[in-house]
Structure formats: structure tokens, C-alpha cells
Image (cartoon, rainbow, N blue to C red; front, side):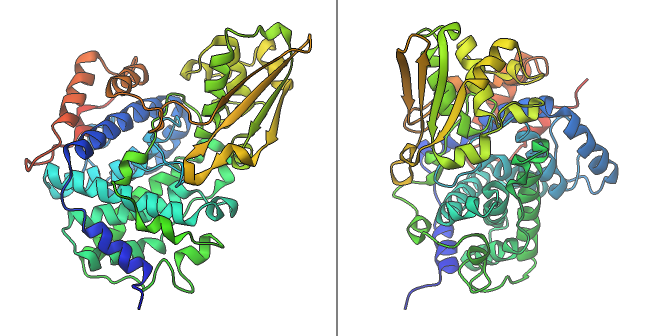
Length: 450
């Protein structure tokens, strides 16, 4: 008789007991990358952040965990929520193609917040993070592409389950305890793709609630609260709610920890824009904008659905606009935070946007081969053509960045917010998260903004 899916998954996650040097180095790089994304998100999404802060911080509560840019400590659930909100504000956090969403932005805040409260060891923090990444990628990948097609945001939906599994490890729960934490989280998940239709600034609420609810679910499981059996595969289970088809093969994992399959982001925009940005940068010196008659972008359907805004009204919408990000990259040979706020809607940019056509092409996506790319074809006024195909953007495991690239990204994102001494202190603190020493939350290094 086959073991139930949720039970088997929990047992697999419990078997993550030791990490290799390579695993630890990857986790440390992912953590540094999270801080880079958080610096950028804190600043770039400031108008939204201020409104969230006005609601959350006056509530106060038991001082358990550190929050970025705050001297005061807050309850672990609140710390997890706020740090995740900051981390997702600029669309610069890590992600996974098969899972079609982001992992570190909810896992790192959740695990750090609870570890801060529990005063656990560095080793346990890394085990918890590895467990969370594994859970997120397996669960979300198994639900795709149906989850996205139904309008759910996998970062929020699967994120809560992953955070619950990760945080259960900090309580030293066994496989049954991990299963209960996941089961409890299934009834707390949320996160819709409606932000893509309008008001994209609210998108960070999805990973924020995933982090908060994951912490809460683990706390309940630690108190002995049992979750429903077959919480993933049951008749009224999570998979039934979010997709028409479950790809069980993805629940079995791989011969390596899936944290190594996550990508890093160079550009402050939705990952669905990155292949076209890379292609535009490659074409920058090959064509002159004044000679362009039309730009045809052949790209997979979900990219158009989630990042097809034609002309962004504000910096939030720039993150979900293939035409805008492509136009900026084609004109400047680069794309960065300076292009976001306010959007550089110059006559040249608007002209290129009007000449850009997004064309659905299913051949640009191949999940088994980890391909999610784009082909940019430029038709010149004299009839000549120039084109560039990017199947794997920079930052993917197949086209990796180095740790030094990530530290450079940290410097760029933190510019004007922290000095070099603080940043190197932060990097050093992350690099020492290993062994059995007591965990010292690096969040506290980034104190209140002056």
C-alpha cells in the first residue's frame, strides 16, 4: 500500500539531518541575497511600507525577534511578516522556476524570527532553511502550472506550508510534527495573482502572510495541535483546492537538495522580464533605436499573463512590464533601480514600447529542462532583422552568479542606507552561521534608519 503523499513528504523532510559544505555555502549566499533584496524593497516600496508600518508597529507585543531597520523587537510572527514584506518590495529576491515563485523571502524571515525567539543554534537554523526550501520547491512544483492558471500566487500559497515545515524543525518536531505543521498551514494559506491586474504594490503581503502563518502553524504543532490527515492529497485537501493536476514526481525531490536549484535576480523586476532584459542588453550595441520598425517578443504564455503591463503608471508596475523593461535595456544597455522610480517614460522609451509586440510561444518554456526563456526579434526599417534568444537568464543555476556578484548586489541595493563597514559586518555575520554556536540574528545589524 502506497504511503500517503503528505506523510511521505514529511518523512523525507525529517531526513534532512546533515548539510554538506556546499549546502551551507549556498544557504549563506541565499541569505546575503535576501538582505540585498530587503534593502531595495525597504526603499523602493516605501509608500506601501509606511502604510503597513502604521498598522503593524503600534500594536507592539512581546519583544521576541528583530526586524530590519527597527531597534525595537516584536513578536516572532510580526517580525517574520515585516521582514518578508521588506524583502519582496523590489522583486529582487531568489526564486525557483519549477515552483514558479519565491522561496527565501518568506523562509529566511520566518526561520530567523523564530530562531531569534527560541535562541536556537546556527546548525539548526541552516537545517530549518534547507527543510523549508525543499518543502517549497517540491510542493509548489507539484501543483504547477495549475496553481498559477487558477490565479494563485505560489509564493504565498506554498510558502506558508514551507515556512511551517521549516519552523517545525526549530522545535525539534519529528516527522509527524512536521506533517501536522504543514497540515495546519494548509488551512491558513493565501495569495492571489490579482496584484498583477492592478495595485502591484500589495504583492509583498503574500510572502509576508506565508511567513507569519508558517510560524504560527509550527507554534500550534509544537503545542500538540494536530492538522487534518492527507492535508495535501485529500478530497478537500490543498492540492484539490489549487490545481486540477498534481505532478507527484516533483514531490519526490532529487539527488541533491533543491536549494541549489534556486535562481538569483540581477534586475528589480518580475523574473518573467529577465530573459528579455538580457536579450535587449545583448542587442544594445547591434541596433540603433532610431532604425527599429518593430520588436517581436516570443515568450511563454504565463510571462505575458503576469508581466504584460504595456505602459507602467508607477514604479510598482515597472516590475511587471516586459515592454518597459525591454525598452529601457535596449536604450541604455542596462536595467536597474534607477529605471523604476519614477518610470523613465521618455519619448524614446514610449516609442519602443509602442513598437513592441508580445507573442505567446509555448516553445519558450520547457519545465523538465528548466527552460523559461524568450526570443527578441527586432525588425529594422530597412527590412533587416536582428534577434537574440535567451533560454536561461543570468542568475539561474545553469548561468550562475558568484558570491562576489551577490555581495556587489548587496552594495548596490544598500547604497545610501548603510555604509561599507555595516555591510561587511552583515556579510561576516551570515558567513558565521554554521556549527553549534548560538544563533545571532543578523537582522539586528541593520538598525533603525536615521
